[in-house]
Length: 360
Image (cartoon, one colour):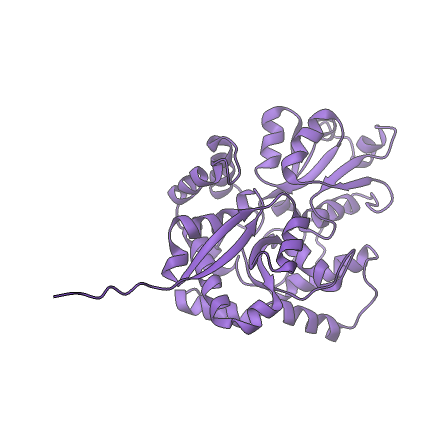
């Protein structure tokens, strides 16, 4: 008697990521086999810069990517480059970034000097790095400086660097500070090159950070694949927040040479400290019962407002912004994925945002 073995056919997808702690949901999805559970095979490709993520996403070399939320809105509005239609399937995490200053400047702040006086003591324009011109790190850096009376468009010099290069540049004196995702602020502290002066979750508790982004046509023309991908990554986010032991396991994967390539204790300290300390609204969150993953429309309005604040976009009507954000945020896809997993979804597509200076 012969038996027939049925082989399951998987849809293969290429996903880009940067070597940061918050690529953990993509890595976990593959290591746990969640992609195969939902009919996919995800192939992860480490990238050298956010510009590379953007370019490969737009060219079709990548099907989807771990991306800065602000990068998506920047490409959508055509700021500083080609305009293209992108989509956000879900938010991968909230919080988890930091602004780091050189040790000397950080100590001066700790001793009670104002940021304005600390930077003026350099006798030259201070040099800060962010990771992408319209990215989240640029937004946190500019917002923090402006809240303390420093015009980030005129009073500092800003460069875009890969986060992996920032600790070395700070140590050599090329930079006075930077804003980036972990573990690169932690790495600067371990090296004695600098100190964190504020975490991004203290600037905006519960802020959106990385998102799962794809081309709009991919989401629109292949809705079942987009829903399966969203379900896969949402389940990985839930796993990461379920218990500390899961984050310890993820730290082992992230430490591998072809993922982040730093000592596992450095990775683990970022993941576990973030899980165990601080106010729940300010720490690194991958799921938070779905509150961290929902693609809130109000988040998009905040980014567009900041782009106009810095003179990158002309004034626009609320209706125009609402249309743009509604096209980018694939809320129906997210709701379908959440329903498959039994994840609660909010009744409203917007939320109240309150930053550290009490501004919305």
